[in-house]
Image (tube, rainbow, N blue to C red):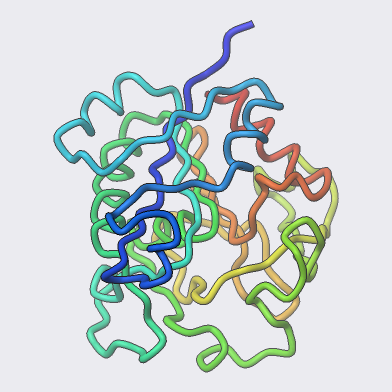
Length: 241
């Protein structure tokens, strides 16, 4: 059995941005939640966590079989999607944003599989020319609380899986329960993308590029393997890798 190698950029913690980061070290450090590793290992892939070395991007693109852009407790720079009025709640990690954007831009033309999770889903949309709600609670009024109100191992709300998409073809059902922990979300869909999952309050929760062998983004966190949809999504990603 061949285990594909999956590149996953790490998160970056710095006390100058997050004062609480000093619980581990006074100096900047990389981090990742273990579910990204564990779920891929369970499904037959090797997670390879990488730091922000721009000069190595060509090597990463050559050596790795697939790419996951993971989530994190931060917001994408609104300037990336042409907005210069910045909401007061925005929390930036510009070094991470710049690296992941450059890495994703290099990966996409190779047609190697790409999966965006939460912030990674949003970044795919940005690269395709789309925009984000900078602050979902104030810019998209809803009874659904998209910030985490239950553990990520439990469903927070349901999504409709759109008929005719790859995601629906894999899942063969119209709805699924998903976890939810995000401050931003897709507003205008990027050119060439289609929505494959939508929440009950009409937020785009999943996207795909029908002209790419595997370029998919989801707003929730499938690495927790909450239900059959999450397992199928990651199985399809690993198989494509």
